[in-house]
Amino acid sequence: MLTSFRGKLAASIALASMGLAAPAMAQSEEEEESGPVTVSANVALTTDYRFRGVSLSAGDPAVQGGVDVAHESGFYVGTWASSIDGGPAYGELEFDIYGGWSGEVSDGVTLDVGLLYYLYPAEELGLDTDYLEPYASIGFSLGDAEATVGVAYAFEQDSLGGDDNLYVYTDLGYSIPDTPVSLSAHLGYTDGALAPPLLAGDPDDSGLDWGIGASVSAGILEVGVSYVGVEGPSIDGFTDDAIVGTISASF
Image (tube, rainbow, N blue to C red):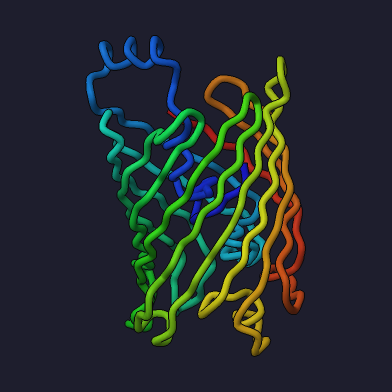
């Protein structure tokens, strides 16, 4: 699965664990066994941590993982972290905290709204690098196919140079019947301080990112590969197109 938020592979965000509701019978059986609160965890090793098309690990592998706590009402909180190559300004670790609500609002339609806080606790220069980003998405399910349309808006903050940032995206997914194989596609648009051309030194403060991928699941394990691209100057290990492989486990 392609990441639409940080990690939200997981997308990111992480947030992917708050997926479509289980069948009513299976859900009631789970509630009887585990109660109203569910705790889940995930770990992953990826060949390149790409956030909205831009590498935050300098084109090198990254170790990632997170924990989610969800209530049967739909409210959830979670944390997610990844190794990065952020230099003295951002350090070697990204740590995210998020919370929100996710649930089915109509047959086959799921709403997810929340707030994500990006932290860089290993930065060495004493700069204000942490920032907040509210988000919302709507997911549509039709048989073995699903689609998500979402938006994330980081309002004006010192860590963004006093600017704001808007991210709009859509994700498509298809599970091939009677196989463990899933296909995915992603398209995103950034306007503001985090635009890929702007990060690469181009004065244009808007740009697109995209990706296509496939994954295979086996129990708690999933292995995936995706091709990721981003608009703007091509910088090796930063904004160049890349093939990204990921192996993850969910508990």
